[in-house]
Amino acid sequence: MQIRGSVLVIVAGVGVAGTADAQDPRDAAREHYTRGLALAIHNEYEAGLQEFKEAYAISPHFAVLYNIGQADIALGRAADAIDALSKYLEDGSNRIPPARREVVKTQIASLIPRLASLLVITDRPGARITIDGRDVGTTPLPDLVRVGAGTHKIVAIAEGATPVTRIISIDEGERQHVRFELPAPSLEGAMAAARAAASAAEEASAAARRAAKAADAAARVAGIEAAKPSPQATAAARKASLQAAHAADMAAVTMLREAAARGRAAPAYGGR
Image (cartoon, rainbow, N blue to C red; front, side, top):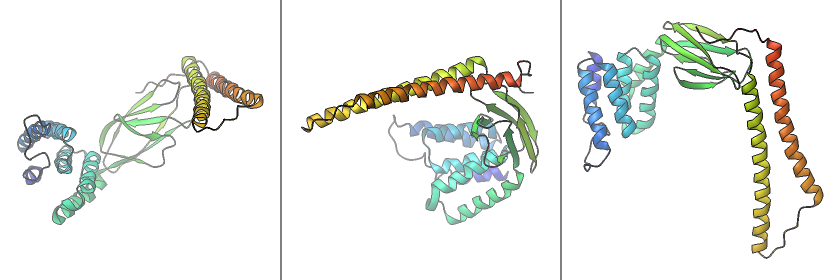
């Protein structure tokens, strides 16, 4: 198998090898790496991939990324292979022989057409999107999301609302639109958001008071009498704090009104 030869090529040069004492964590990394090679030789790429990942987690040397990428290729995971091999080239830089760099670049180029593309949109902005547990950003997303062919779990998470899940299947080279209609924020979610905003406003006000006291103390140490805040300044600070809390309350009210406008009988989107 081509992948088998590719994996074995870098055994001698892998970064987890070397002299270390018995307590060196690189010993454990070498054990995982060696097991990964043995599994890959017998075409057990899934188990081998996990061993390579364990080795990299303990001793993150760029050379292990090459093996991770080759195992991903064998498993048909084009997007993961591109990520691993691209990081291999980036982290390895001039430590990778020129011939090897060209081989890897060619592999990446051959994998790109095998990717699929997802256009993920939501009926209102601000939802965090994860694909197979990986955070890809907050809507509106700036671009298409590249994924490998196969089945993927997409989750949209809006503040104060129940997460919405979609399971999709996509073929190589396919472009698919995934649109989420987000449920209205729940009463509990809206109130939690309001409490969080009010708490943040109070913390900001307290931090400002602490900063003022610290500045006054520093000035006194330096022999400079700090000017005491005027009653007008104190009143202004108190007013700003109250305005922040009021703004948080109004945000909660707005969220609740939106929920009512969308209808209490609106269906709950829990995925399909």
